[in-house]
Length: 228
Image 1 (cartoon, rainbow, N blue to C red):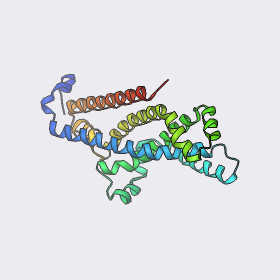
Image 2: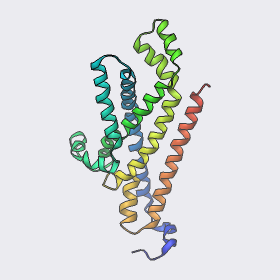
Image 3: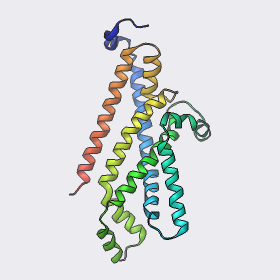
Image 4: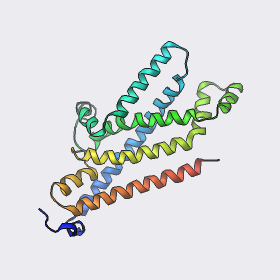
């Protein structure tokens, strides 16, 4: 056990830097892949929630209820419980329950419902007059979606995926505690379990830097897209 007290946090000679950079790459890889899938799946779910929200059709309202139930249930389950719950599903999808690849299904299923709600809110905030004008000009439903809904709500959509990406970075750290790789696993196994505070500190600092980078990219993108 490390007996150096607070000084142990700064004994960087005990840090295996190649392992640290490899874990950093795993965390970035898990986050980027998950964000891409969540952006697509969340957009589709959010669009479905939006389009079925005010329908008079009983069948369409039933579809809205089913999708909303799926979103609300999986958005409510704590991630550390969800990843354990989905281990059999992960085994079927990727053929493994450990490693960075095995974390992707749980990351996507946990974050997509959250982003779907942000997408739905972004669509509902669009000025109704803009949509009415598009309909009056003869635009089809799909033309309204990709020429009005998505372009008009793009700043909010990017802001939402930025928030989701930052949450996913935190999720990757939790996933690492049960063998998903990345900085979370390194901090837990090589840091906490080995009483190596320097590794835990460095892994934490790297995660914070990654969060700042994602936040910076997201903020700059929103400013570039927002024409107001």
